[in-house]
Length: 427
Image (cartoon, rainbow, N blue to C red; front, side, top):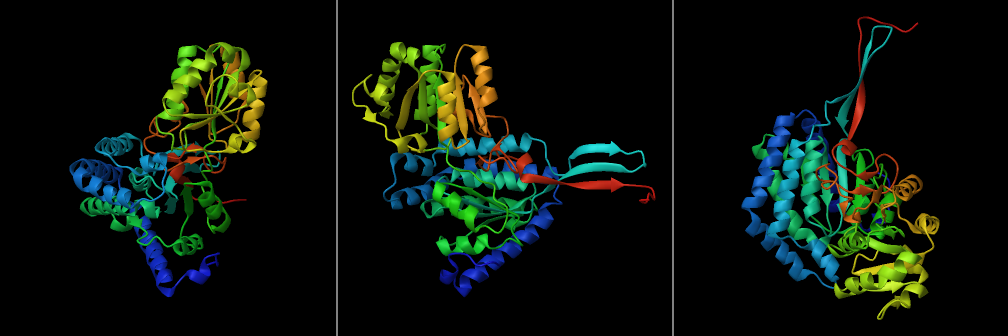
């Protein structure tokens, strides 16, 4: 195991714990890779049922985390909160996963070559997944469900602020794994919240096949720097929406409000609004007033500041900031070229959207803007695995290798070549 920056803080007990987690995960991954689709789907449905039956106990565990939370913004508290409605959404997400095709064992390609050999590309699991994430306990269920369905064992290291919630959810998953005849250690939670353990786990490149960080930029950068295994990265969600001169005012207002206000603390929430100047003269004051009535602080360029009251002048840093709060950076632009130039300079590669009734402008935006999701006349909040028909997601990758956008079942599988012959040799 390679040393990490936290090695001086890692005790023998910590190393023994990491060793046990990795051994258990490797053994579980080997068994889970052989599980049938029927077994995995039965587990998904059983967990969905248990989420509904155990709502009271799960909300109580979550309340313990909420009561212990100190110094979190309203948006971050929202991310931490479990409600009966959110538990129902988690259950429905697992049911959707059960309805999706199993990527494991699926023949992706099948060719018969002139030599007579048959060559197939067949889906296989990645193996052991380390998932390091913050705040959102609903992600615990999404990640566990995706990994079990795709045949991967998962080691979950959630944030300390959600420890009791995650513990209750993981225990539920493990109970149902045993009942389904699947390896219980396919889902494990790191039982301690020490930061030193993260560094120790990141050094396990020989026993952990991929690490997925999901959280703040500091977390992602640390994991990317220290990991001795491949990293499926999710950097910040600095999402943009551009209102074109030919945008329908009612549609633009609806999409901006939905993108910014429904859940401002999540990665697909709108952070920067770009507005074409002629459209802004007529329609932007009313839109800004609507946003302010919903509690949004506007941080605007000088031209935007002149359009209303209580607008804060934007700083250069605001154009690069993922606020994760009811704050919206707003700038006027001459047109499509200037909007795209701004996006290309400041984007984090997550989600960009345009509102327009001009199909040629829309297609030009789609052609020139390169992010994990590019949208026309749709809320940035739709960039989500469930909303895009992929079931749950373990994260949204803003890199281009090995996966991009919502990482679901297909992105958690690899492949192997299966070759069948009848005695062929190479000349």
